[in-house]
Length: 449
Image 1 (cartoon, rainbow, N blue to C red):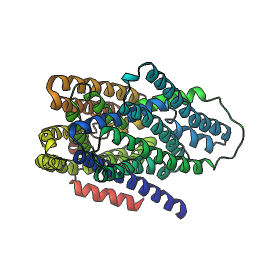
Image 2 (cartoon, rainbow, N blue to C red):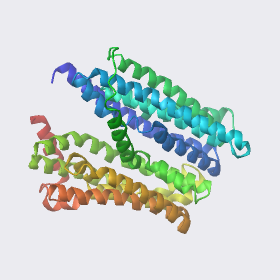
Image 3 (spheres, rainbow, N blue to C red):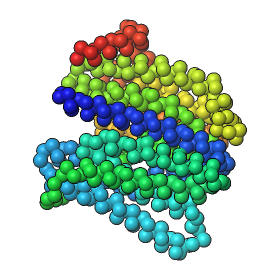
Image 4 (cartoon, rainbow, N blue to C red):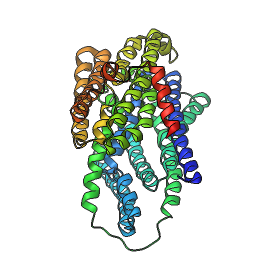
C-alpha cells in the first residue's frame, strides 16, 4: 500500500471512530439533559416520538439505501458508470417520492380527522422523512469510499446538534415540552440533511454525466430490503424496545427504560469497537480458509472483549443507583433495571463473535432470518414482559431478545467452523496463554506482517 493511500485509510478509520465515540457521548448527554430539564413523563413521550421517527426512517427509505455499499463500488470498479448513475438517481429521488407520498397520506388523514392529529406525531413523521433522506445521502458517501462523510453527520452531528439545542432551549427558555423537543429534533435534522447532502454531492461529482442503465432495479430493491431488515434489529433495537414499551408502560417508565438502555449501550460500545477492529482480519482469514488465523482472531477478540467488559459491568452494577441518580431522583428506582440490561452485553461477551463468523461464512443467508426472528422476539418480549411485570419485565424482554441473537449465532458459528466461538470454548481450546500474553502475541503478529 502506498504511503498516501495508507494515510488516507488510517485517517478514515480514525474519523469514523471519533464520529461514533463522539455520537455515543452526545446521545448520552442528550438523555441527561432531557432528564434534568423535563419531567420523566414528558421525556418518555419525546423518546417515543424520536424512536418512531428513527424506525419510520427505515420504512420511508424503502430499503433504497441498503445496497449502496455493495452496488456502487462494484459498478465503479468495473466501469459500469451508467448503472451507478441509475442507482444514484433512483435512490436520491426515490426517497423524496416516498416522503411526499407519506406526507400526502398524513395530510389527508389530518383533513379527515383534524381532532386526532397532534403536534408530536406530526413532527415525528416529518423527522422520519428527513432522516430517511439523510440515510440515503450517507449511503452514497459510503458507496464512494468516503466513510467519514457518511458517518460524521449521522453519528455525531445529529445527536450533537440536538443535544446543544435542547440544553440551550431548556436553560434559556423553559419549560421544555415534548412538542418543543420534537420541533428541535426536526430543525436539527434539517441542518444535518443540508450538511449530508453537501458531502454527498461532493462524492457524486466523481461520476461524470452520461446515460443510465436501469437493468438492476429489481436487484437493488431486493438487496436493499434484505439488508434493511437485517440491520433493523442491530441498528434500531433500542428504538423498537422504546416503541413497544410505550404500548404497555406509562411514559415515565419509558423514560427510565430509555436512559437505562442508553447507559447499557454505552457500555457495549467498547465491544462493538473490538468487533469492528477484528472483522477485516477475520474476514480475510475465512476467505483464505486459514484455520490458525481464524482461531487466533477469535481467541484474541474474545479476550479483548470479555475481561474489560466484565470489569465494566461489575463496576456499573455496583454503582447503578448512583449512576441513575445523576439523571435525577425520579430515575433512581430504575437502578435494578440497569443491572438487568447489563446482562445483554455480558451475554454478548460470553457468547463470542458468532454473527461476524456467520456473516463471512457459508451460512450468511441465515443472518436475515435470525435478524427478523430477533426483532419479533424483542417486540413480543418487551410487550409481554411490560404487561406482566411492568418496567423490569420490559427490560427482561430486551435481554431475552439479545441473548437469543447472540446464542443463535454462536450455534450457527459452531456448525460453520466445527468449534465453539464462546469465551468458554476459547478458554478450553484457545491459546494456552493469559489474556495479556494473547494481546502481546497479537501485537507482535501485527508488527511482523
